Amino acid sequence: MLALAVPGPVVAVDANLRAWGGLEHRVPRRSAATVWDAVCAGDALTRPPVVERFTQLGPTGLRVLVGESTMTSQRRPPSWPELFGVVGHLRSVYTLALLDLSPAAVAPVWRALAWATVPVLVSRATVDSLQHTMRLLAHMKAVGLHETVDRAVVVVMAAAPSVAREVRAVQQLAGQAAAHLVRVPYDPALTRPQVLDPRSVGKAARSALVEVAAAIVDRCQIDREPPAAAEAATDGGKES
Image (cartoon, rainbow, N blue to C red; front, side, top):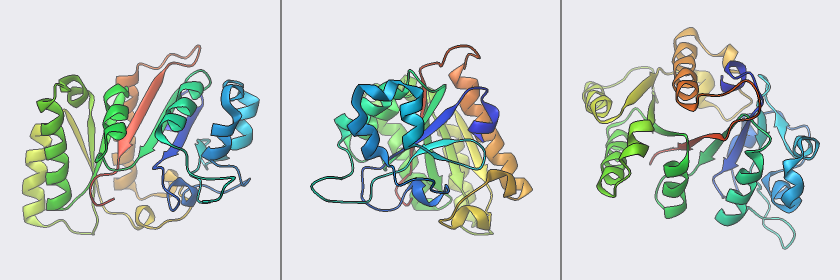
């Protein structure tokens, strides 16, 4: 949705730093290139033609650096310093970079959420996952990251066609703790690890995804001229 909404190019980076799963299941693969190839490119990554060789292309025009699933002496998932180096180079090429982060259980993820233009906290619509998200917001405030919390967008993904009453009650509490909360209703297309075109998602879920994209764009203040140094970083929550 961001690729459709933003006038300039948008890139998504698999920043889970693990050797399985991730964005590779959500976009068609046109090459074997991964985020590891971007790490190896170094400073050359600031040249758009070089970046284009490593990215996969989503149905809406989203450029995607998929994760590295190989663990050999030649290829491996990047370290956090290597990943942040890649993101630093991409800032000069893309209008907006979306980082798909692992759950906020380690310091580098907190760091990424703190410097991101828009921290996006993704929670499943379960009591446990929502409580985890609220604790994360509370912990961030406790260590002085008030601005990070104020910029955050909380996205609650329904894991089943119906949401239990106790979950709805916790959602109301989460809505009070978060500056902006969006509920994404259950949609089968969002639950399967396969290529996803958001335009094919059901109307209710698609409308919610548009709201998420709008919340990000509103906070990024993206310019139509040169690429802006804007990032959105997502924490997948405890159960993602």
